[in-house]
Length: 198
Image (cartoon, rainbow, N blue to C red):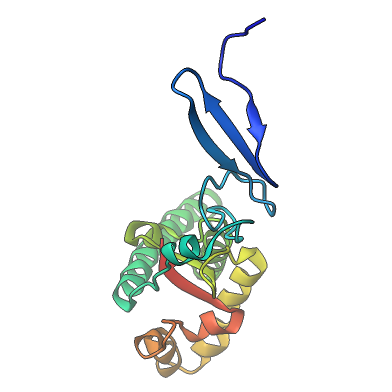
């Protein structure tokens, strides 16, 4: 007895399904990532977690090249994020001052960047608003996996001792990608992260 709807999928190899499609006999390979369970299709690396997929041949791996983000795109993203944080801090600061009569602009200027960069860089997309606009992302040093929230927080914390060296410290850190072969800042090197084209 025949039933309507899409035909059932069939297993093909470990972690792979084959979906057949009616009279046209269309077939679509479905590859579920063994690490996170995401449908990776025919990709050599999982688009969600970056793990290499079983059975990926060398040609497919080489085809999925990764590109380091340019220093200009990183600088532009940082500028946009600075504007976002400044606007958010002012709005929150004035709202709290009006509601409770307390000036928290100082504490907010310290807390907001830590929360913002940790959350945005630690999530799977690895992008702040500025990085999203510029089409770049923070990943592990291989450019395949998200760095996660602990490493994202550590990446931000490293900036604190660097900032103690007034002007020179942050300047050296943010200029480091200009001559670094992996386009890393010092705070990237500390947690083995990098910034790549998304």
